[in-house]
Image 1 (cartoon, one colour):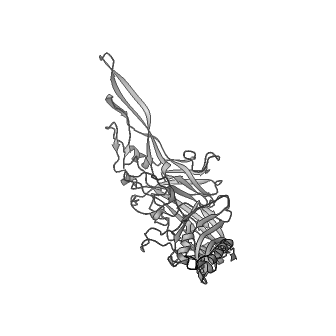
Image 2 (cartoon, rainbow, N blue to C red):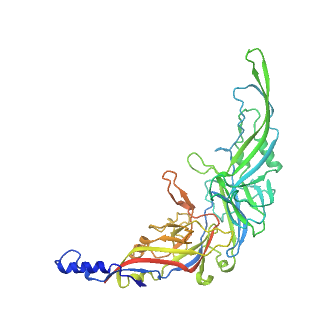
Image 3 (cartoon, one colour):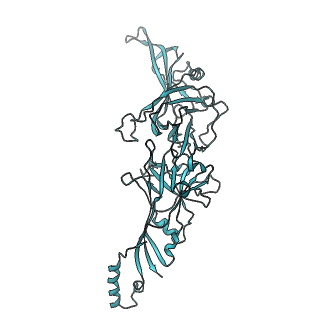
Length: 493
């Protein structure tokens, strides 16, 4: 510890005043004691790597697909399962405009779909984009199901699939962004993956869902009864990449040809003219749809599996712990796979052994190591109260409760690229522990998912079960580069 008696002159001045005043003056008894302001950055931080029980990936904003081998974390594989629908109903709407036209006669409506393709805008990539990737789109088996009311996790059971893909792309280059000058996240600037859908039975089913007897056909109310959902998988080699696609921008586009005739009366009202309409129409299906009340209409989730190597292979089940000494004095984070950090402060209470103290300011500072090319640091981290069993504390004991955040000024920390630091302001959190108002079981540090409040416009961590970031980012920290900085005032007893 390094002492810095910043208030020395200040206190000396008041000591002189106190000598001239009535000794019964309020506060005079304080200044005859030993008071000072101290700073330390040598309090022990005990960091370790822990494996969380599960990460909620339902209603995720990114559909993750692909595989890669991280040189430190091992193999990661992601498969995405999702439903599609037309507008906000379980239907196919044709929207053929025949308003105001009489004697309409359908010639073809439509006898054949011209083309069907799934368009997936890139939103995220982790791994080597120079490797070719192959993608296959499958239909869920008739015995499978996806439920928008169910919370799906990264380790939820995979639904059964039909054995034949309905569409595929082989050996394509990943182009996650069209223009390298575009700031990440700018809407409408990302390139897209386009998968043609050609499987005959699936195409025939879509063709059968229109009713030629209706000019604005609204049919197919049993659509999800047949198309239970889709699955997008990658069959690339394991050292390629996991790619994210924006769920809000995904479309399945159906183009079909239609033809009909109608009659128009001439201006003299003496004869009818026959008009023929022969054109192409499109029908879009979407993934990210919500009901009017805000509830989920579509079900979707990412199943993420990991085969860890090296020291991290010790983490095989939830609550497993890898100490920094077992991993060459390093600790790890990997969102999406459940690898998180736990920090404890074993000698924190020694601060008040001989003095009464008050924390003026406290910061937990983490400096990540430089990431290997192709891998992304988390943008935001969050502090969650830990249990003695090395898991996040929840509001209930059933495993389904919400996470309990560490209270205080700095529940979250955003990465500062200029200083290469994550910094948490933990002043009141540490004071509560010192004063005996808070438990000292340690804290879980994990990447978090931020959302923007539509009413206030403020940005903050997601609530409920979606607080942990389900994307695949990673960070590595040397034990020596994790610091607890504390400024505190003491009063000697």
